[in-house]
Image 1 (cartoon, one colour):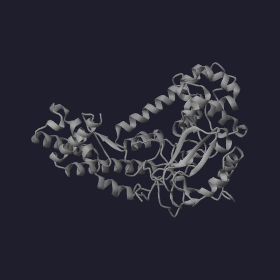
Image 2 (cartoon, helix red, strand yellow; image 1 turned 135 degrees about the horizontal axis):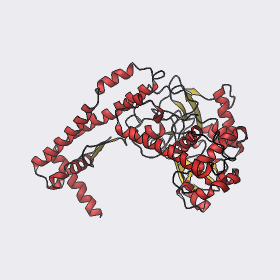
Image 3 (cartoon, rainbow, N blue to C red; image 1 turned 90 degrees about the vertical axis):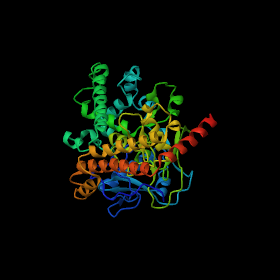
Image 4 (cartoon, rainbow, N blue to C red; image 1 turned 60 degrees about the horizontal axis):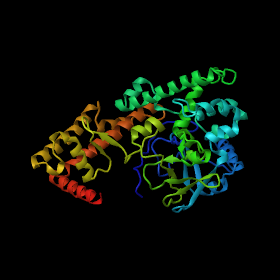
Length: 447
């Protein structure tokens, strides 16, 4: 089974649910763990099971075939890793896993259907910078509490939504990644700017409808992060609603967003991106055996993006990469000779020669420079890979969660650098040029 290597320890997250187009856990687990607790949704007894039973009942009442879901999937909870789903039976390629009807989807049409008065007020602002109507709708529904149609769904979402941007400054420094911190700062700026814009443009115009003591920043932050981490982009929404703004293609799909992310296409769901009888269909892309985790791929993200946006890390993430300092060249997991040669060509563009025209001494110089740059990057860290691995063993992931995450993140980054150095060192400069020339010729021939 060609899947990501299992990481046994994980984050000490005791949230009721970490989201899924925010994922529901940190390092994804393929094999069952002793602490994994399958939820009994037929005869619920615990508070957690009762919440999910209520959620499943709500789905069933609104057109979701929960009997099929219960036959196909086992929802589990892990004290550290949150929620996930495993196959109960052998699910074959292209088996239909679920249909999500329009009645439970939260998109632009939902506002008009469930809150026509709110729709009238915010309709003029659709497509405006920093104003997201769905975020306002989520705030509106959360305030309604028991009177909200979506209450069973909201009750299984985390509040607050876990976000690395909430780490203390000294905790963020442990990641030793300025680009990660910059990304988090940009998200925070967008969040704060969005709230200010909504207050100025809408809330202050209609203070009786949007009292600021209720429509405060904390509620906005929850709604903002729920949308940012869970929303699917479905172009079919635009054609159905005759709305050209990009926001009209976005929507929340309850239950689908409870499935974890995996960058490997071994266990992945695929939706057909079309509305069939006002439903969105999700199919399995490959066989899934009983007991294996069911995944959906959000998008090909590296660990920096996954952590910043979804609060997860992937072990051996194939989309992880490192941009070589001072050039557009980059290395990533599963380096092939072609990718190595391409990185060399980009990094050594100052030699004014294409890789195919470089003299042997230039080729070797270029390869050495790439390796040197990667080694320099390793020395930038305050600790070695071996020291990080040893330190992680002594950290209680439940009591020192943030410190554990930072250590695991550094390990993944350093492993990528060390693997890249070993791979590039294993090829001769001449063999890389030959492979580059071959691919170059094939590419030009196709053109």
